[in-house]
Image 1 (spheres, helix red, strand yellow):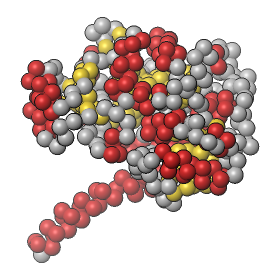
Image 2 (image 1 turned 180 degrees about the vertical axis):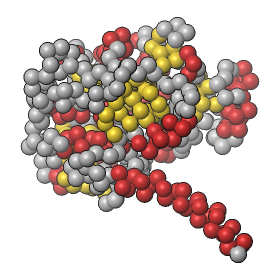
Image 3 (image 1 turned 180 degrees about the horizontal axis):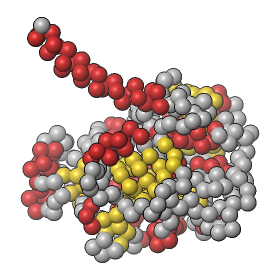
Image 4 (image 1 turned 45 degrees about the vertical axis):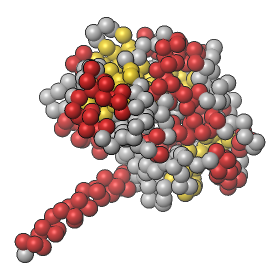
Length: 424
């Protein structure tokens, strides 16, 4: 990102004649990132449409949403079926719309369907020269190989092909180790592990493997101890190789995450990191990436190097951590670029904060007396964005609260109500 120390002289102004579609594959209604996309574009006067699971999901309840489409998907559909579904949505919208994807599966499908007849007429979206690139970098195995090829540091990673190789690692490998799904779409088709999991010892790894097929489709990644590591994030709109001057790039730190020290950001702060920005630019150009990206980096304090942990080729759930004084974030930057408008330049939003209320409450309890994930800027945050609540858009927090409390109430009904009846 270009840093203008003179202050913002203009505010972001999007082309309101071009709508946007929030696209997701799979079933995850309680997603604060999707709500953030709806608010970001809707506040700029853009008509925002979204694929939602129903009328009462947080995104569907946003006052900034113009329309919704109920389209149950798993990510395992035939590409022709997905293309037909997208064409039907485009027909209902009635004019070309900017596509914003919120999961790796949707980003991969859109890229691979780019050559389908009519899709480029229906939607505006960035196109990589290699349509398979988003799927490859979203894959933990593909990303590791790309980083090795281009000299980008990553944690040491093992790719077991059989349960026997998992057992071999349990007998000889280093612990703790992080277990992750190897490829995108696996969490929908066959979720060997639903999220990144820190495994403390060989017996725990063996116990997990009891539920795996002989082809486990996992990776075993070096765990960088939290006592000697820092977690950083990069969010970017990257228009393509050699276009750094037109790019928008932000860096920041994870303050807390869920699961603790290993999961997604529940609290973060914007903090400029020139070395990390340079590494990220080099990676984007080396692999030929175009689009919005969300990168997770971990600085290993033992050798001082930043090591890439995840490359998400789509908007990240915490992207609203970064909005500068011109009102620019990566979603607005993409809309500007795809509609032929220049992006205003303003100072980096140093110190800005982002909090996901529900999960950060649990994270605060878990982190009590423990160090944070990254070196947050000193002092009070000049501004804070919340994942769920907003004064100009209060309704999305209600279905979130219902969604979070429903499993607790069901468990209570299964466990305590029968017990109370027996006691009576």
